[in-house]
Image 1 (cartoon, rainbow, N blue to C red):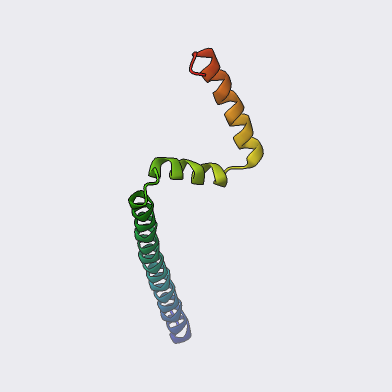
Image 2 (tube, rainbow, N blue to C red):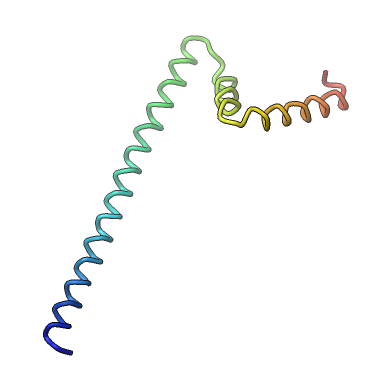
Length: 89
């Protein structure tokens, strides 16, 4: 192997190591941010519960608001049909 090829190979290896380290550090930082956000969400639910709100209902509403309105309506129609068939309505 020539000296130039050896230098290029070492340079490429260093670039790969630096890139890998950067990726790992970014993931770690994002995971820390994710945990902080999860803690904040938990605190808001605790606050809501302290104010008398049902957290299960709040979670259900949040889930529903994230769904496509048409898909949510279709699901609700099916759910209502099943509940009527079971005598729950």
